[in-house]
Structures are given as structure tokens and as C-alpha cells.
Length: 257
Image (cartoon, rainbow, N blue to C red; front, side, top):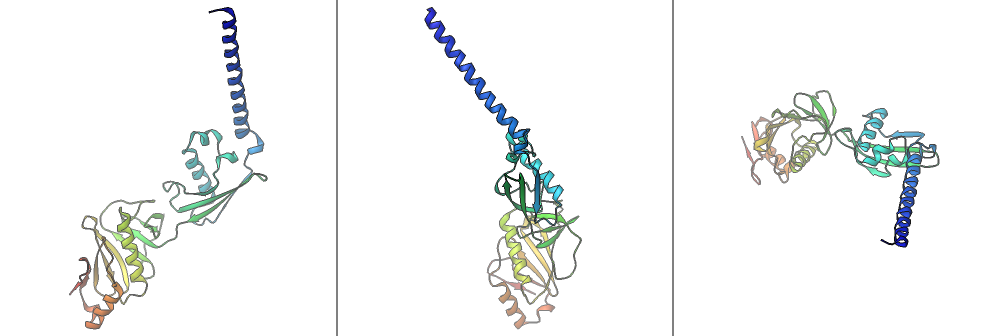
């Protein structure tokens, strides 16, 4: 290799080293600004709308959730404004089962993060070994006392599945929805008052309803059409409260005794 050519190669290599050093310097400065500088340091975190979960629990578990989602978040840390997201965010149900979603707003001037929390709303109580509140999605989100009476929908599971927080009362969403919709129909003004919804055998895909009259048998696979009208029609034909059961487990068929 000739001397002029060697000089050109050395110059290119030197330029490459200088360019790389400049890039690293810029990245290092940006990283320092993001992590250590007061310019991007969070001064205040406001958490609103939460009732079930306390604010400190939300903040700490949310920070752990965000840090687990990316290496950049782990590098930045929760003291940086860049760590926190903007807009709507769905947190991990495993860490915050009572929180349905959140909305983030960041004020760069005041260095404030405001988090509006939307929590799951109680729909009924699910009891197996322990009792939990569940929402309209059938998600268990908080411990509850055992309920009696007609005011609160109570679901009892006899399958020993040992469900806990963030589990859904039935594994298949369509089965859960059919159960939820049936609860809504019977709670809206049925001629019979439901006391307890019993998941007898999850393998047979059925549940029973204990009422102030006969026991009702349903399939998890479908919702009987015109359920309220059918019960009213039966009540016109016979003394409905003296029946032993009414069976809706076969689609478009009703059996009672």
C-alpha cells in the first residue's frame, strides 16, 4: 500500500473514531439529562379516581409494571418524566386487578404527572373457598364478604378451581358473558327472585339458579330467548313457585316439573 493511500485510510479511521465519540458524547449527555438532570425530574405524581386501591400501592406497582416493559424504562427510572406514558394505558391485571384503565397527562413546566384511574365496578360476588367481587367482564378484582339475600348477585363455584384475583369466573369469555347476561335478565324484574347462581360442573357447561321458587337450569353455551316471557307464561299455566325445577339447558326447549 502506498504512503498517500495509507494516510487516507488513517484519516477515514480517525474521522470514524471522532464521529463515534461525538455520537456517544451526545447520547451520554442525553442519558445524563434524562436520568440525573433536574430538567426532566418528576416533582409531583397526582393519582385521582381510585377508591379500592390506595395511591401509594398504585404508584409503586405501576412503576414496577412500566419498568418491566422495556430496557429504556429500567434505565430512565420513575424519577424521569420520560419514564411515564402519555394518554390511555392498561396496567397489568396481575399487579393491579382492580384497575380497568388509566389516563396519563404530563405537565413539563410544573414537572407533574397526573394519573386518572378507572377502577372495575362491582357487579356481583363470586365464592369458592374465598369470596371476591367481580365486574361485568367476570374478572375477580377484590376480596369481598359473603353475601346473602337478593340485592347482590352471588355466584357459587363447586368445581374447586381455586380462582383468585385477576381470574375470570369462567375460562371462556363467551360462557362468562352468557352467565352475566342471564344474571342481568333475572335481576331486571323476573317473576322469580334469584338467590344464588351455582356453577355445578364446568365440564358439563351448565349452571343452576336458586330462586324463591323452583331451581332453574341453564347452559353456559347460550342465553334462552325471551326468558322473562317464558317464566311469565309458565306462571299463568301453573303455580310457578310450587315447581321443583325449570330446565332451559336444551336450546329452544323448556322442561319443568
